[in-house]
Image 1: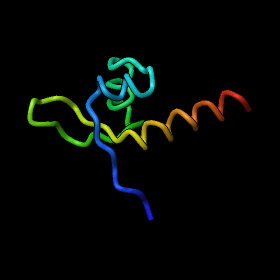
Image 2 (image 1 turned 90 degrees about the vertical axis):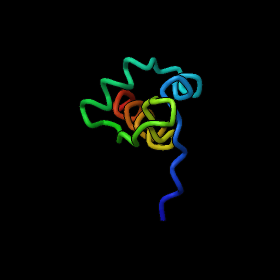
Image 3 (image 1 turned 90 degrees about the horizontal axis):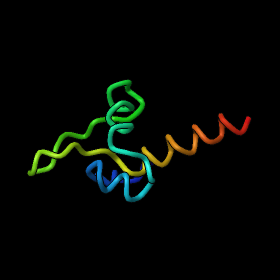
Length: 64
């Protein structure tokens, strides 16, 4: 069973991971991350858990 998504805007995602919002937008455009709509202020939302999993996968591939 998958945990409930923790939806954050791109600035909060940057604060949590250090990945710049522009990079996150590229990953969204390329389909590496799922777009979860917008918050009431119109900011793009991503799942923090999915982002962290994506970063872990990238790190594992780079280490191999």
